[in-house]
Image 1 (spheres, helix red, strand yellow):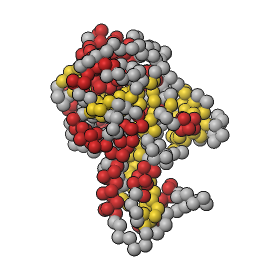
Image 2: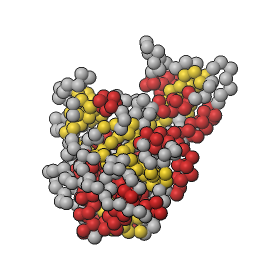
Image 3: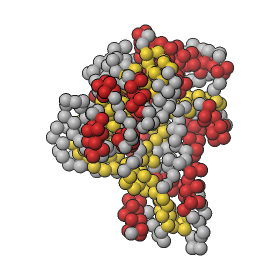
Image 4: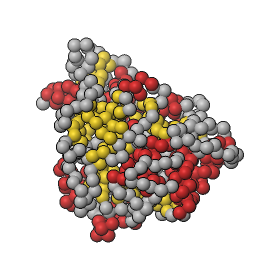
Length: 500
């Protein structure tokens, strides 16, 4: 398989992995353990596990759950599902028990690759039909069926405005195209080694780094999680040439007391920022201190990650813009889904080979997300005279904390499970560290002794610490519109006045 700048990848993930295996080069290094995984070993172990899944009777495009943090086992599990022509169902370990249970049930997965750190949780919340895979279960192998480019390959759940996670489905073709859009925007080559510190159960870690390396023929360094204290040392030992992170990580690095040495600075071509807007001041300070250019980009789970990117130096980077389209087309829509006049704000829409095929079992949401063959992003913005997109707001009420999308309704529902709650609404507050942080407002029954601490404890139990509100404000009544609907977007200003 040959990587071409002008054409989306042909073939399937199996074809590309087989081609990389022929080179016998390095696929991934793991700085924390010193382990090295070659493309050939990765292919051989993935193929063996895929044949074991076939031996269990897993059908083409059937969901196989992967409940793993970053690491050798998780990568092999992912590639096993993709190589076998099954639907790799990535479980977000930070989503909280309720969302994880929903995803496992909704996906219909009968088998799961589960990391030892997650087995107790999956045993507790997994649906009855789900079996945790063990090595002996994969010993009986069967011949793999042919894989079609249009076949379901990836299922990844993302929060939506309804509160229930939506299952984004990518095909073999769109998944590869996600790696290709990254590769062409950043001129990735076999000489490059990316630094994967973002979890591969997110679209950024999976498509930008893993698929980007597969398509371009480069390699990766992968850590179990990001560490500001160890980042530059790991980058040095792994000899990385680029990294992909989110604004929160850039901020943590900027405020750490560690610095890259001269060799790291010389080797790093760029750092890449995505998932939420990067503050202009943060970007400028980072580049000034570390001497590493930051390329701001934009991507969605629904588009196999990247849709927009600023050019590499010496190309023009417009600070405050996630850039121009690479490998797909961008369009600005009016409220009636027509083309907006030049420079006018509207909804950003995308068309290209990297766009998802559907939301699993949700034809209504799928139909609403598309305007013809254009995917509506839900983000507001405009395009300038040079083709650079500027994002000005969001149509959706998602809270974006550290690059993670959090649906307010999901938090609302947990708060409403407390009998004393009359009204509840979660909302975003600006935060220097995370971009946005989660807060909530509630009104309670007269005479209730319900406390903020009790509600926070309830949310942590149901949702996990990451989605739990930092503060919960008690109000006599939440603001509502003419129809009686709570006006969520007014809450941040209202609680600021109340506390003043």
